[in-house]
Image (tube, rainbow, N blue to C red; front, side, top):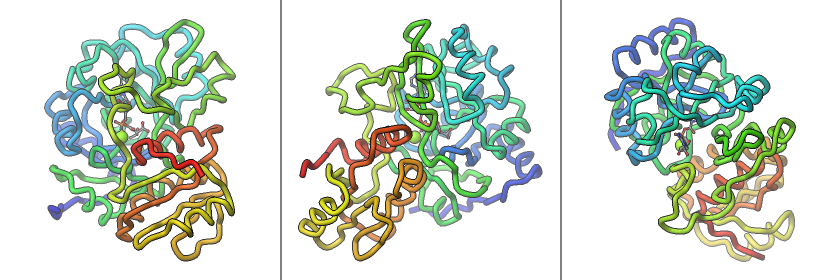
Length: 338
Ligand code: TXA
Ligand code: MG
């Protein structure tokens, strides 16, 4: 692993300004958001965006989300805004929600992964918003992990070096990310409905208050090989620690007993039970806590040298669907029926 001289800046107006200067000059900066940390660059700058793909080892056909800090910044990025998008933005922006629109010429093909659409999100994190404000231009920011690994939900210098980027970004730091899983991504297949391509903090239940919210089949199952998926990110193995992850479809004592009888050297078990002992780690008692802790636990499991991780099946309600979606990909779709 290359040792990086990443500069860590505690969040302040001053560091927002410095981050803006770096990005205006075509550089990349690690930024905190309420979902996960992002690795940001000027969304309009093709070369800057390419360096982000390179730093992450990200496939070039996987488009980036463009981050804005005010609703007036949306129209120049897109060719069309459905009425329903305005209604949803009114209620859930700023927040962990990304919407897909036909893109304008302002967005280069590098940012949109060659697609004719652009995904836009307005984060609620004050630090992210202050950085976007200081820039005065939209920021393309994928999650700050290396492509395929668990997303970073808190950053320390160690964490950042462990990421092993090919470039040396400056990092603006705040406290842990509130949500812990990435934003909900949706598109508009018809005037009165949305399709959820990636579940997140703005849940299907929350969207159902405004319109019909369909869940794309790729959210909960493996897309057939070679199938065209609506969101390129869904076809890649994702969020994986070095250990092999398995979801175990059991709860409480049944989960605990199953893990005990299948444990070997290097086995960890993530359970909803708050009592931690032996190989058992508390994954969180409810869906919000599980979302908040998921990626940190997967990263910590790597630090502990875990070889196998068994995870208690999460609830699929609310933000639980996002937890299940990320776990399925971390587990390469392996679910053990007990
Ligand atoms: O919470 C988040 O969304 C974080 C923070 C940093 O804002 N960002 C994030 O970005 O999760 P990333 O690059 O890790 O995931 C973006 C997802 C990918 O699955 C990608 O395929 C999808 O959004 N996506 C982006 N643009 C798209 C488009 N035009 N059409 C369909 N899917 C798109
Ligand atoms: Mg990501």
